[in-house]
Length: 201
Image (cartoon, rainbow, N blue to C red; front, side, top):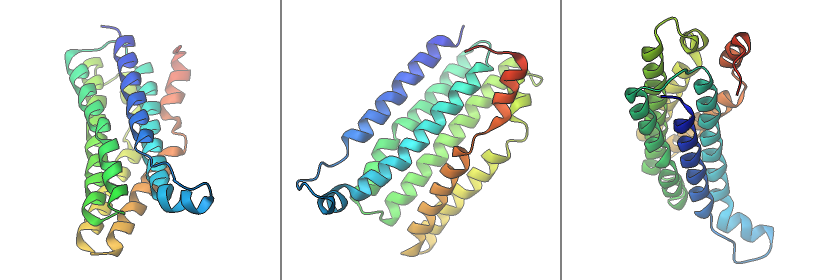
């Protein structure tokens, strides 16, 4: 099976996820910056963080499937698992915002991020398994240092939010923001392989 249908479906789901998140933002009743800050300030910040995460997954998903020749049943289910985890992001984002970054909602947001990362790794593994250990994707990913570092930061953030009563939630958020910043830096591994193989969009 070709990848085009899976990619189109995934793009549609991620677009809906982003739309749901923006609809959760509260419109200020006033018309000045003070009203914006008091009524929608934290909502805009959590939306920005989650938007960046969804954008990172969309970008990496697109690049990964440029190196994927065909789709198996396992890949389809793994992709659905990833989409499920990402579809929960609007819920955990809204909960974290509405509870003013309380400890448990921050932990739930972190667990959501870990689940999405695990689902993405499983999807990557399913593709490599279908194409073989010498596949272009396997060569491009390499040891996946970024992925391993991200998992450690997620777990550190969750642990900090659980262990430290007040300051821990901010440490946790800091870890989640740091992971997003790491992935915003362009990752040339897959792009380099795509260029070497002359893969067309």
